[in-house]
Length: 400
Image (spheres, rainbow, N blue to C red):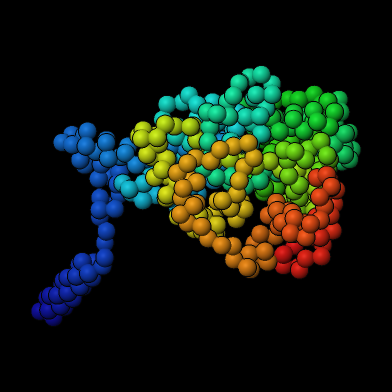
């Protein structure tokens, strides 16, 4: 009898617990994936409204050609896709590409590609070498993004760039943009290496194995593949800001903060940089492709501040939407947006420690200082840069 009562009591307790658990589960805020997933919504509508669904998904989707997997371009594309996503209202679809040269061809010819990242010296190279004529007229730009630093990694027997004359140097794949910048710089400095077109990871391994003399990468720092190099008798070779480079390239530095395994604490290595450009085909107004690019501009420009905060790539902090780009014409709706949304620079911006490595911004500030004080009218760019370095040393530590 007692055992029956005990079993009944246990059953009653179990029933109460079951009901309580069930009640608690119902009171929790559970979300059905179908209510938040645009993809699931589209699939469930498949069949009855296929054309309507397809039209809606395509209407506000913009495709962007980036760069090789793991490179800075690819990371920039991923950041944009994350921040700009607005469901059916706007979606950016980044495509892993092959680099700047292929990116130019993809924007011109690949169906469905609306915009892409290319390097500012690529179009000049294509025209100078006779591969294309008046190609710049086919492009406009939405924004100058950031500077891409030239990384020259070599054995310690290579002390200066001229030591690479006659040596074997890997300059990325032939579809990328590193070889364009490398060839242009070496030609201007009258240095003649033997170039190999190798994917960066393969090239770095060959360098470690002693099969080649140097690897060049022109991308926004820091590069993860190079940052992971630990010793192995390798170092960065400096690239001096010689007069022959000053028309098309900018002064830059690689620091210990960028590459602690290759640069001693507190030290830096001089190099040069070239601009990464968000480029588009010069579409005719009132076309659908033009309309979608207008939508991209409005969405991107309105959210630039979100991109300039962690966890997104630190290169976003270099982006100034209104920065001009010599030799390029800005996409008219982008110019119109900037005209409508002019914001005066914050007085504390020059002391922003997050922009401490933005030498171009400081150099521009210095040129303004020179102009306002009627200085340096007869100086060439090399002399101006020497003055700039002296001026920079006199600025507050936070600005430096």
